[in-house]
Amino acid sequence: MAANMLGYDKQVALISGAGRGIGRQHALFLASRGAKVVVNDYGGGLRGENGGNPAPADNVVAEIAAAGGTAMSACNDITDPAQVKAMVDATVTRFGRLDIVIHNASVYAPLGSFQEARIEDLDRILRVNVHGGWNIVHAAWPYMLANHYGRVVVTGSGAGFFGRRKDHAYSIAKSALMAFTKVLATEGEAQGIKANLVGPIAWTENSKLQGIPPLMEHFAPAILVSNLVAVLAHEACPVNGEMFHCGGGFTSRVFVGETDGTVFDAASMTPEAVLAGMGAIMDTADYSIPASSDRSGAHLSAAIAAANPAFAEALAKAKHGR
Image 1 (cartoon, rainbow, N blue to C red):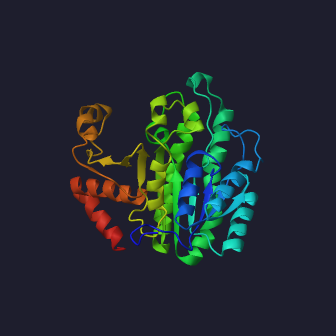
Image 2 (image 1 turned 90 degrees about the horizontal axis):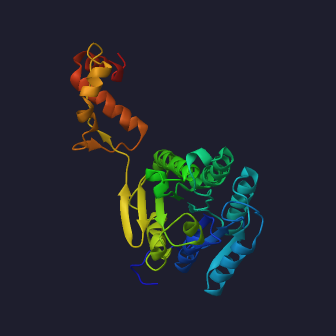
Image 3 (image 1 turned 90 degrees about the vertical axis):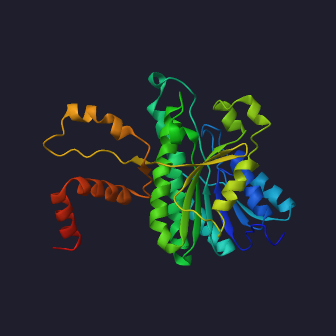
């Protein structure tokens, strides 16, 4: 490997949903650069049915071994906390550590109107996409804390960023992962743990069934997502708590911003005043990007203090414990 190439020697990566599609590509790519990879895949259908088939994970492990890499197969159900803990413990027992978690596993529901949507689909998708991510990171977290180091990469979606027409349950689940990533980043930062999220666009069996345009077969291979994921999974990762849209060679930052807004006093804030001030409330000429709800709260307090001297005085006294 060239001296300037990002390498993962001695690093151990656990990747969920790595038996097929984008997850498989992540596993092959990190292994090709020296990582020891745990290939987790429950082997079910693309909608989460009929799990328990070890073949997808075993096949990827065989590919990695044939190329000279090191990998371990894990046909564990990530919706089951006990199975996830057993998988993580087995990873550390075999390799001595766990440095990287890439939560890629995902299921979806058929596209349709909200009137036709079923709560059962929402429950099923949340169990894999959200509960599964929680379970894996929760099991890995003590090991990362003990090592004062870790990299967590969560697979989101444009559907989670912006909402996807006729894809309600999937959009909701992927949106939840945005907040999950932000919370992990805030809590882990002081311990050397970074968490970031990627909303990928790639041609896979799953994305075909979700309506990705056919032309993307030739222009959006999964490797173009794996290049970004590799940066976020590396020791040199320069960001924390960030979100990215990535596919076909395109990469952008996605963020939740807050406008400068408008402050009304208690006497003048009426529905009519809010309606009249909506232009200023909505104006995006100036905005902030809070890293957490605490930062957003500080922004709100500062805005109120600037417009209300009594609040500013009370806030100053509270800060100084008086």
